[in-house]
Length: 100
Image (tube, rainbow, N blue to C red; front, side, top):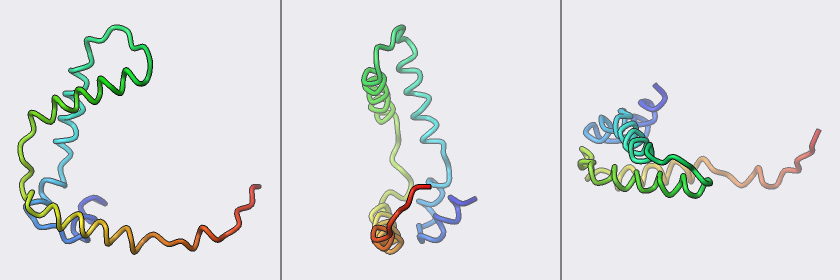
């Protein structure tokens, strides 16, 4: 629900909003990454896992189609930039923090 309200508050056009309300593309990428790395028998370290995950993401990227409403992505970026610049303030940096 919060994601839907955020999409509405940012003024995202309906074609792009329909795509952003769904998690199908993320779930698809995660599944492709799992399939790509499931044959590894011995994980040596974290960097090896990151490399395999990145390789899976590249593989998933080849299978994705263009996002509906992709022409509105620059407007979404501008709305996000405006939202984050007005919500971030430097006032908290001047306060002294005491540990309990």
